Length: 127
Image 1 (cartoon, rainbow, N blue to C red):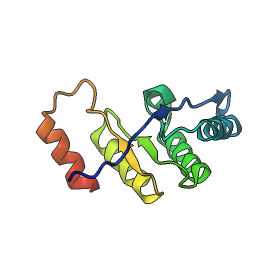
Image 2 (tube, rainbow, N blue to C red):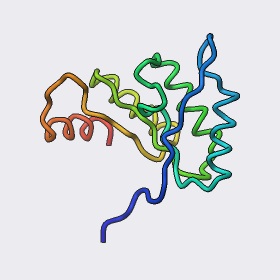
Image 3 (cartoon, rainbow, N blue to C red):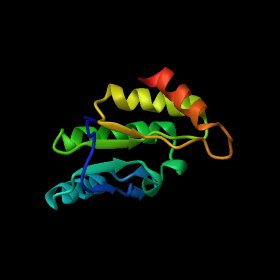
């Protein structure tokens, strides 16, 4: 029997900003609201979370904040994809190291890697 990793409804949560960067106070309120409403999982820094326009440091800080704030109440799936394969690998390894429950990884956009190559690159470096 195949083990189901995630089930139910996962919110692709937005990342709120101020002029100086991520608004962690508001982000924390959004996380709490989603958990209070009975969400089954959160997706942090997916495309809805503006990850493509965030620096690696902003992404890592947002990952860590979310994992700590959620505190294992629901699974946290973190968007670690990037057009740079090495960045995607580094962010995925970081997400695992801080206790994320899963990673959302896109095939590097504009690159034409085969599905087999994409899988091998991430699998060999992250799992």
